[in-house]
Every structure is written in C-alpha cells, then in structure tokens.
Length: 270
Image (cartoon, rainbow, N blue to C red; front, side, top):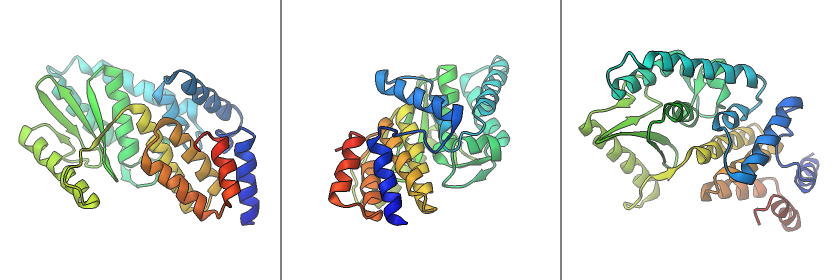
C-alpha cells in the first residue's frame, strides 16, 4: 500500500498536476487558475487563496460572507472618532462573531463554517480586513506563532489573535512587554538571543496556511494531500522550515534517492 502511495505521488507531480487534485470540479479549476496567475505575476486576491485552502466546498458562500462583513465594517467606521477605536471594534467584533474555538490545525474556511481558528487563520482574517481599509500593518513570523502589528502614525497596536479578551494591545508599555515576551519565547526555543521576528507579507502568510494544512494532512496519514499542500506552501513562502518539512515528508514516505530526484525536479524545488 505504501509503495502505491509513493508511485501515485510521483506520477502526480511528474504529470505536472502539482495542485488542485484534492478538490474537484469548478473549485479545482479556480485553484489551478489563481495559483497559475500568481506564478506568472506574483499577485492576485489573497482572500481567494485563503478560502481555497482545505476542501473549499463552500467557496462562493464563504467569500460572500466575508465581503458582506467588510461592507458591514465599512458602514460602522464613520461612527468612530479615531482609527484606534475602530480597530478595537474590529478586533473584538471578529472574535465575537467568528473566532469561537481555538484549534491548532484548522483551515481558513473553518472560521466561517465552524468558528474554529488558530493564529495563522485568524491573523490572515485580520490582515484581509486591514488590507481592505488601507491600514499599514506588519506580519511577524515566530517559530511557532505569528502576530500582527498595526502602525498608526507614532502609535503601535498589536493584534494577538489567540487572545479574545486582551488581544488588542494598544498601551505603549503593554506593547513593549508583549514584544519582549515574543522575543523571549523565540530566543528560548532557538537558543539565540539575537533573533528578530521575521517580517512576512500576506502571500507568505498564505504559504504558512498551506504548510499548516500539510502538517494536518500528514497527521492523519493523508500523504498525498500533505505533499500537495507543502508544494503549494512553497510557491508562496520559500521558508527553510517549509523545505525541512518537505524533506521530512520525503523521508517518512521512504522515497528512494531516484524517486526523490524525480519529485523534486518535477516541482522545481531541486
């Protein structure tokens, strides 16, 4: 059975179908199309990519839900006398309406369908909203976490998406303390006291969401889906830890050196 899985993976990639095959019909066509467009000109609608991660069974419905929510927020914005107050409203409104149950290995669409979220999916949702309203923000990647920093002139606000009670951090001393906590946790995990959280963009965050799907799929022994997901992840974010997972997956599926070479060559990662 294992040899069959390996053979299937090789034929999957050598034939050039490097994405979209774990979905079906129109959704697979959409996914192939937008990823192909991204490979050509490195742009596209990040929301589409995020909604497609996972099964994407309700792509149109989920996209309509988010667009309606953005319109709702837009209608509320004029009621606030400062951007900071509006952002505070946004942070807690998203949590109360969508982010109900924290689960580490969930897909973006599960926010809308089941209220499940993790730091990657919730931060991506906030980033989509900030993009829509034109706020200047930064995405910072840690080893096992990600957070969002919003710059309002001379003020800095942190979005800690996993904290529904105190996750909107606006006080300057609280911001400094939280940043120190992030740095301390990272340094402890890496034994490196010179580490800075990596600045990434929204497309790289999409890659990390695919990476999360790859891990999730591997844990349930769906090696095909895991392999496809990590390949998609590397399209958006060529991070060392993603390559590490790719190599790990190759080892765990017992690919021979020749089989590894064929797979890596076929997805242009060798």
